[in-house]
Image (cartoon, helix red, strand yellow):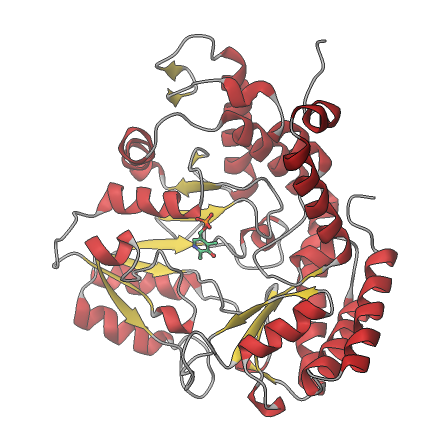
Length: 421
Ligand SMILES: *Cc1c(COP(=O)(O)O)cnc(C)c1O
């Protein structure tokens, strides 16, 4: 059999318990509305590459420079992924091996920082305003071994204030300035970040995990021309397999490659890398531009709809795929909002809002995103419908009748826009 990837029948026979759980997960994905801003539906072609025998291959090193024999075919797919990443993002260098976003970020630390060296500061956003776990959280290696100092969003606009960030950079003299977040809905002025970095002699690192898919589709500004190094996951708006990549200026290529392997990782996941190559090819198609625009357009419709339902939209709107909404006007916490929505088949997550008076376990807000729904073909009209359903449920989270009706409306929506039909 020359042509072979995943074999469902073989799995069902060999391990019915695992097969059953996987089938149930697919059912869940078909019946629950995916508003989690960091999730998506990857294509059957990507899934086929993931389920291929390239999982079997050891390939420590890089294409043409491996520590194992028999790498001629994984060299093909890894080189395709590298070339496509460089072309799609206009990058000088690409490393497609990081197993996940956290590992890509670790490689940045490995390339540029010394552990436990308080003089080497990283200026990033405070976590409570949208920074990621790997941007200096005390429970993560980033915060345990490296010295992060944090900027906040402006209290009035709830948006970045570049003058204050510049003041902090001048006062703190960081080695690295970090932009790119997990819960920031607006455009980021990467040119302004570059100017500040140049003024204080810092490297500019952008963690583009959340919005890189929008960059690929031309629906969000690209950090690549401005940043020394850009890390990003491949499984969020980019709609590829679970994993990550790094693109950087040529001058940092060696340092980044050495930090990914052998410093932080061993053998690369060549089946994932093949799947990344497939996803990048898909992201270069004209349809992906339409997709990225639909993501942003429908997120704006969702933001407006949630505002009409009485939630307070943080920063007043969105320029991206995600919306952060303050649930307090409806008298419900983010935690209870998440639970009520889950009960009617809408998956989203509770989220702190900037300057949240409530603790992270019961934050004031929720975060919703449209990369998933837009993949299914949903657009502005559907997101207005979803906002209406959410409004009904969040105003009456204990009303069984309201929730039953909402559940039926969500199921109807999922039947009209099926996942993996
Ligand atoms: C998702 C995300 C990551 C981490 O990605 P994992 O693949 O979960 O390790 C890192 N940074 C940002 C900004 C993210 O949104």
